[in-house]
Image (cartoon, rainbow, N blue to C red; front, top):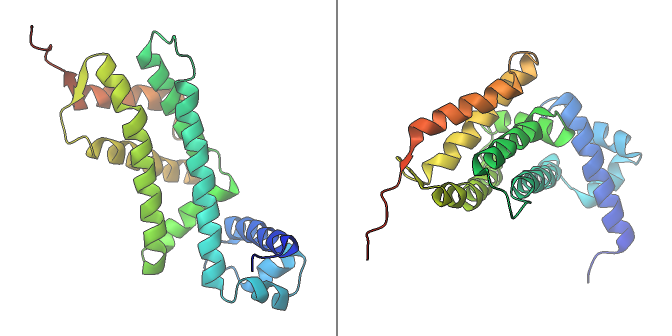
Length: 211
């Protein structure tokens, strides 16, 4: 039997409340009682939907990763929204800026992911979901970046599957620095730096053989 709409609404309310509390206090300092209070319900009512803290955090992480994945996809689509775009490099710069903004803006979802990434060092149960997030992010880069660069005659010097890992790892690492020192990284200079590094990772593809 499918869940009642009221039950689904209550579960969503709990997940939203848990996201807010985890973003504020972190996984280690958050209790189910804290989340129940934030959701405006009893601890028993929360247990009805999520018997353990781990089961609730799994749903919170799933929701947060989905939110960030959707925002990232939107950034790529925005950069490619003009079918008559002539300057593909400027489109890629736009995409990089947007990808940085997705991370730099400290939404509750971004804070939760950052906290749980650290927690995953000690909790193997968190790792599969986070690994899935990185795989999806890598697929987004491969699907949108590499074809556009090929259109202007560039090919990677390294294994193509490494490129999205480098880009995503760079941005995710830099955002941790931004969280502890929000004036350390200039967005414009970051885009220039990524572009300069890309110059070392790509080369002109040889012309196709003449018929």
